Length: 255
Image 1 (cartoon, rainbow, N blue to C red):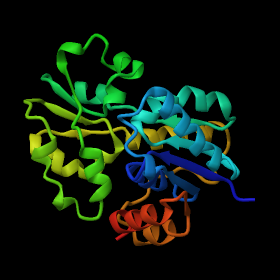
Image 2 (cartoon, rainbow, N blue to C red):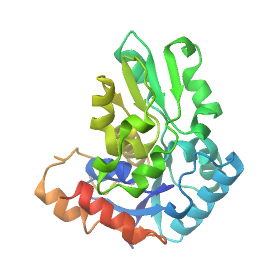
Image 3 (cartoon, rainbow, N blue to C red):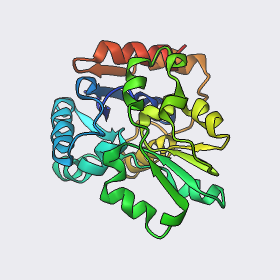
Image 4 (cartoon, rainbow, N blue to C red):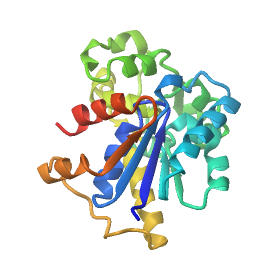
């Protein structure tokens, strides 16, 4: 029986994480569940986010799973502990890449994230001792704009959403923002950091420790035609928004 790696997100943002995981683990099979109908999670209470995440994982767990990724910084902050306590397989979460961003420059680091992520205990722990160097900001409305324009990102006027700040690095603390990594980096003229590749490597490491990998987790060429061809057969999309997420994934990552 096939075993899968589950990727859960509040919408389309986790597709950027799915792509990273599929590159890192080129022979694994994946499930993707995006809760698009209730996106964005960033304005919800911690209790609601926990409930939404638990409901999504209940649907994913109907399949045989060897591991999972909570591909949402907000859901990770609110629900990762509860999900890990409930399921026997490794669960990797996403968190703002604050530490590598701080290490990359001597100046201020702008952290773009949802209100719920910035208010979380996990973000407070990441920022502890470095508060004077961190500029936490919520680009209100940007997640919704990306959800609505994932296939036509040029329609998104970033100047309307992004705060005007001087910084030495910017952290994309929401996986939705990774869709616009190059544009946001160019807007501020500094490097942009996110946790996607780190989460994919962490997942590969945990599965390797458990002996759950079907192969050696070798990094593949993201531009490989063979990788793109095989990827279409390696992922199943679930949920009410499965057709939307499938369309966006194939258009943005497999063309």
